[in-house]
Length: 327
Image 1 (tube, helix red, strand yellow):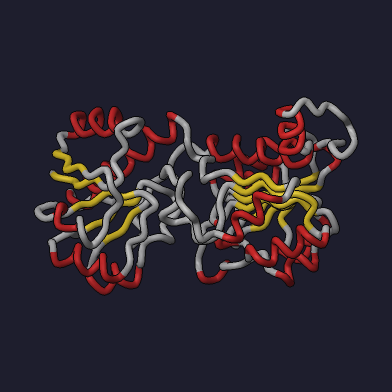
Image 2 (spheres, rainbow, N blue to C red):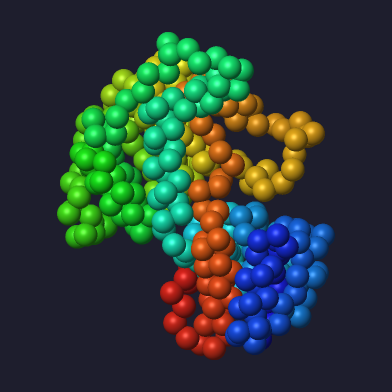
């Protein structure tokens, strides 16, 4: 079979694409750029397309349909960058991938520790040989009650890791998982907002939870609450978060994702003017760590993402059940 790969990265994905393409007997078409209306024609003759977090809107979906594309596989867990309504309209199947949850779980705990130990300010001071103590006194994890929103594979891994710190843990999910109950207590959102000193997000983004943490949600939280997001930026109303930081309602935040990040991350834009005012504001706070959607980025995860994208396309082509099918 043939798969056309957009966003093909020579420096990390190439070895895995070549390895698994050879192993599975797959012919690859390659484009290092994100898919656009201008380069969509490259996928002509390919029924299967693999992408990463690039926006696939209705116009691009229509163009792929015209070119004979039958399936789009995103090499990511999240798929909110793909217009599913358009895919449904044009009869294009969509799938995502899974990868080891440990990469994001590890990163989440790192952001937690950096946030409560004021590591951003410590590192900034150390750069200019300011070794003074005022303003950088931290807190200890066992003294935190943590709310984990979303108990899929990543959320469960975070809960397991947090249990080793001796935290009290609450969990929220529409679908409860029995293994979670070994270390955490399921509760509703209001209880978590009221009781927790730290809240970490591990949900996919959809219409039902867009801006889950908004002005009303922050108002219900403890003063000085710590917010961690390694899931999707749209789960948080950024302007409400900025206001909560300014008022002290939010005491610290560790953010690996922000709203409207598509087309920005994974490119060298150091000489560009970015129309991302909220990002500049967030980065200006001494108690906010913002990283460029890197929680997933490990060798194991990249291998898993490439392998599963290829396998998903193969399952569809062979008429087999696809564990990563979205649409």
